Structures are given as structure tokens and as C-alpha cells.
Length: 366
Image (cartoon, rainbow, N blue to C red; front, side, top):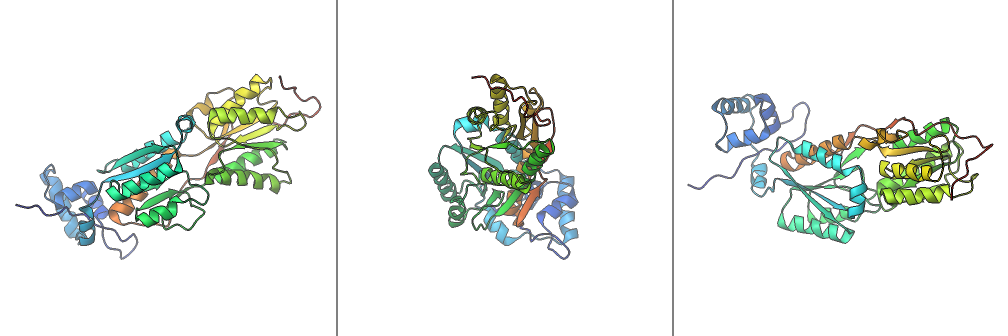
């Protein structure tokens, strides 16, 4: 006998007077949405008592499965995609993506969804992957990370009709949900912490300007300095790697003593730790001669010497919320304009202190 197509339901949002959803049925029955779907489609593996609870919850809520969602479920891939255009060097050095991906996995836990993860080395290769994913219907939606200035992926994904969630808001018109992490407040807090310690020559070692978050962090550093009457003229663009951070730091510290920075704010912890090593190798005492602030609060930050003052974010929570937001969109039809994780916060440790006096500046070793 031919089997009927699987049945799922869509959601119309939340609030008084809304239609009940499969999530409501699962919550009332004390089970998962997947179990509710199994009961609806009379699949094996559900205990008799659980089946009775699900059917009773459906009756109590007056819930009926959506025929539109039922038809869409037939072609569902039960996978979400994450494509990263990063070189092996930057991926190996970046402290953000491992915990973020762990958060994505937490977000899909308890569902039958999977994560399709691809790494490519160019923008062109990344866009080709998106076209393939859409054509082959290998994923139900994608997470768009590393937003770029004037990002061409936004119109491409809209053209392909591929549902997406972006990490932060792009600077081009976008039809997609943005899951935002307010890390700019953390940069401002870091700069103001240094100004409060008497620093006036505060440098920034940033990431590649092609990335929107790198550009925005630089702008936050500039704005914070200008708000205190200081000129943001000590900037070096690096690539988020330890090697890039080391090179940028050396170029900063080889300036004449009255021109080099007394403090540096880095775009991630990897570059900050590398910069600390370079400064110490050049004969500087940290934090007496140079204060350092990182970004991410990676696990290593608390264990280097001196312990790294840094800007803490929560990539695990960001990954979890992003995955849940995308699944709610592609499986239940739930849509929000934006979702936000908590703001970044400054964590003060041993790598920052009062600015050095100008009477006897430390000489940098050749």
C-alpha cells in the first residue's frame, strides 16, 4: 500500500490569538517535535503512552497539521549549511569558529537536522557552493558568516531562493533574518578603559577591511578615540592570524619611542597573544611598557603571562541561537526580523595598566 507523505506543521508566530503549532503540541505533550511528527505519520518507535499524550495534546489545542507545510516537507533536506571562505591558516588561527560551530550543533540537538559544513578558499568558490546547494536541494537554509562590505552573497541567495540567516546585519538591502552580536560596545569599553588608565597613543591591529565586522570594529575604535579628543592614527591591518598579528605589532613598536603606541587593541586574541610575544622579545615589559587588549576571550587568554585583558563574546550562544532561528524559519515558518545575543563585555586582567611615564621611555631592542 502506498504511504502518505509525512505531516508537519507551520507556525504563524506567537502572541494572543495565534494558531497553535507543532511546537505547542510537543510542549504540552512533554516530547519533541520529531516525536509529534512520528505520531502523525504512524511511524514505529513511539511508546504507546507517548502516542496517547501527543493525540490528547492535539485535541486539547485543536491543532491540525498545515497542508502547505506537509507538501513542503516532502522535499525537505533536513540539513542547514555553513560555508566559510577562509584559508587553512586563518581557520587554524581563528578562536571564534570552533565554539560557534559547537553552538550550532547545540542548536540542532533534539532535531533530525544535520549541519553541512564546507570550507573554501575564495569568494568565487563560495558562491559556486551556494549555487550547487540550491540546485541539488542539499540544505533547507544556510548561515551566512563573515559578512563582507557590499556583500554579493545577499542578492545571490535571494536570487537562488535559498533561506538564510546572516551573522549581524549586512550593509546592503537584505530579505534575511539577522542574528546579531553587539561586539562594538566591547571595543568602545576597551578603548575607554585604556584612556582611563592615562593612555593617549592607543593603536588598533584589525582584521581584513573586506570583512564588515573588522571594518565596524575599526570604526568603533576611531569613534571612541575621537570622542575623547584623540587622533586614531595608529592602525595596522592584519589577517586575524597569529603571524599577521606579530608582524603588525613589530611594525608598530619599531617606531620612535615618542611615536609608538603605549597600548594596542587587537581584533582577536590570537593576534594579541602573538603581539605580546613580539613586544617581550623586543625588550618591553608588559604591561608596564605596553598594555594589550584582545578580543574573543578565548580559553588561552586567562593562561598567558600576563593574563590577557580582552573583550568577551559568547560564540557558543550565538551559534545556538542562529541554528534555532534558521530551523524555526525553514521547518516551522517562524520569522523574526532580528535576534540578538548579549553584548560583548570587557574582561580586565593583567595585560593592562597605567600608561608609562614619558620621562624615560623603554628602548626597543633591535
